[in-house]
Each structure stands twice: as C-alpha cells, then as structure tokens.
Amino acid sequence: MKEIEMKYITRDLLTLLISLFILTSCEAPNEIGLDIDPANQVNSGKIDTSTVRTVTVLDDSLVSIGLSLNPIGVFQDPLIGTTEANLSTGLTLSASAVTFGSASLLDSAVLVLKYGNEFYGDYTSTYTIDVRQLNEKFNSGSSYFNTKKWDVNSQIIGSKTINPAVLGDSMRITTIVKRAVDTQKLVASQIRIPISSSFINKNFFTAASDNFLDQARFNNLIKGLHISVKKNQPQMGGLILLDLSDASVNGLDLYFRNDNSGTIDTNFMHFDIVNTAAASSIYHDYSPPVKTQLNNPLQQFSTVYLQPMGGLRTKVSFPHIQKLKNLGKIVINKAELEMYIEGGSDNIFNTAPRITLYRTDIADQRQPVPDNNFGQTGTSDQRVLSELEFGGFYDTVKKRYTFVITSYIQDLVTGKLPQYDTYIAPIYTKSNPSQALQASSTAATAGRSLIIGGNSLNPNIRMRLNIIYTRVD
Image (tube, rainbow, N blue to C red):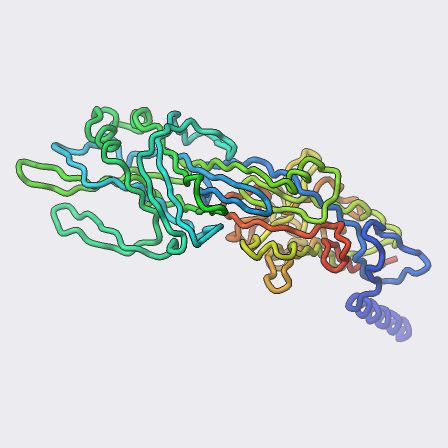
C-alpha cells in the first residue's frame, strides 16, 4: 500500500512541477494548430501554440433610450475614424395642470445637463454645445436605436461653450426661494446652457394654457429638444458623457417673476429630462485600415479594433481546439486568453479600461461563457469565476488584457458546447460582481482599444491561448 501511495505522490508532484514550468514552448508558426507527437506526450503540460484567429467586425446597433450615460460630441480618432454623438430628448411636466401665474416676466431659462464624469478626447480645446427643437415628437415609449436620424429644426435656441478641463468640478448655483432671499448651493458638475428668451416666451408664457394640462398636450407643443456639439471643433474633438438618471437635476429651468397686485414674486419651474426619455444618436465613419477589415471578414489582420457605442468588436476563434483530443482524455487546469495592445495606441487617448468576452449560440444570440455565467440565461454555472478571476481589466504596466476561460475551453474540447462565435468588446467599468459582464454594446464609455491580433509574427505579443492541462487516462 505504501508503494502505491508513493507512486501517486510522485505523480502529483511531477504534475505540479510540469504545470508550473512550461514544458512545451512556442517555437512553431502560429498556424500549426496543435500538432502533438504522441510519443512525446506526458501527463501534464502547457500549450501556447494553439491558433487564434481574429478579425474586426461591426458591433450591433444598440437601443439608445434609457442609457446609464449619454454621449454627445464629435471625436476624430486618427487610428479608427470619426464618431459623432447627439442627444434627442423630451421634456416632462413636473406636475399636471402647470400654470405660470399672472403677468409673468422671464428672468432666465437654462437647460441643465449633469456631467457623467467621463470626457474622451482633446482636453486642451473648448467645445460649443447647441440646442435645437425636434420637428418630430419624442416618444418615450419607443425603442430608439443609436442609428436613428432625427428631424431637427435648424434654428439654434441655446448655446454654450465649455472647457472640458473643468468638467467634473463642483459648482455653485443660485436657488430661488419664494418670498425670501435667494440662496446658493454646491452641486455636482453640470453643463448649464442658456435658452433663448424669445423661445420661452413664445412656447411657455404666451402659449395657450391648455397646452400644460397634461403630458400629451405638452408634447404637442414642445415635441422635444436636440443637443449636439458643433462639428467645426478642434481637429480631434471629444465626447462628453452625460448622466441623465436624476430628473430633479436634468431639465429646463425657468426663472421668472409675477406681479401680484403690486407684489413681485420670484418663481422657479423645472421641466424634467430623464434618461428614459432621452436617446443618443451615434454615427461612425471609419479609417481605411478599419474599413479594409470590415470588407474582408474572412481574413486575419495583425491589428484588431474594439470600440464602444455600437462601434467595433473583435471576433475570436480557436479553429484547431479539437486537436487537444490527440492528447487523450485531459482536464484543462487553466486556459487563459492573453492579448496586448498595439504599441503606441495609448499615446494620445487612453485605452479601454475594461473589456468583456462572450459567445453566441446556434441562434446567434449573445451568451456568457461558463466562466462568467451567473445565471442570467438560466441556471448559473458552478464553475463561474469572480470578476477579478475572469479578467478583462487593462493592465497598465504590461499593457495587456487577460481572460481566464478554463471551463469554456474544456467544454469546447469535450463537445459540451459547440464553437460558434466568440467576441471581445469594450464594457462599462461599473458592473455588478454578481452578474455576468454585459454582452450588449455599451454607450456608457468612450474608451477604445487596438489589440495585436492572432497572426502577429511576434509570438511574445500576439493574441494567444495559454493552456495548462493534465492527462487523466
């Protein structure tokens, strides 16, 4: 019995040592797949020569109403192309049967938009934000997509030039106190755009009172607003993220006076803007290298692209993964997908702080991989990893991303899961640790990444799948 126990102890030690020290090196070209000589098989080993195919493809358009953050701006990325983002929104009555009182006199009108704590682009320049009316009615019950072209009135009713360097700083605003001294309060960073007094007087103070009896009638009067950044901005421009989740902050603020029999009252009225009644329109115009990949989806390229906002994702495939069966019956101890960013691609603009990895099923629907399946699409996988273990965070020192996809690769090898498509894409960083990383495209961040693809001639930096395995037969 001791002899048998010693045999297994020796084998376990050998397995551990072999797993820790790389037994098979990456000396062959990337396209060799998994060519393994059965005569040289050992009980454990590491493989980093598995072929990884990569190509950039368009991401799907996204429903842009109800977003956690809404982008506006024009951003010209010299490596990817131009992105333009505009915002269309409705105004909501703060109460039914709104009235402005008698002899109303406007002091000022301001459109307030809360800053979402992210700007992506050239901080050194200023940007002008314009407000126009919509010619078509904004319907908060519709599922607007980011590709929608809105019918917008050409007349500018409000404009504000801002410096992104001071966005994020708290600010003081005046609060109207009826029949008392006005006060000031400190608030989170806002963009406050003055609105034309002629527009307010015509559409609010002199408009028929029945326009303000309910939301439906008000929407017939004010169909909606369109907010955009002037296109003739600095060469690179930028994208501003807005947080429209708080209706008490975002909206149209009217400051006015009433003459009540010789007594002057100062009044304030707020018309809500909220993310469930706001939709971003996002358009992309890509550079020639990106267009080349999009027009040749069956080829491989040395650089692939990741871009949020309904932009770009990278399709990843492991065409020779089934050759692992040549090793016999094996257990995948660890499978790690490792990818480095293109050198210099983060010199001007920051790379995406986090990306996600997901698969598709037979119906081409997005699904979490087993290592990240918290049960959103059914029963959670017992092998699910924590956020930190699964990965996708950008390593600023090594300039790379990694994903641990051990269970996913094991299921592909055994045939438990068929291999359809696997994708990587940018993700909003504030995810929930108890939920699978989102598979849908996000507009809540602007950071993009250029990744060294699977066919790079340099084996040390190309995208690769590192597999540590143990034979069990």
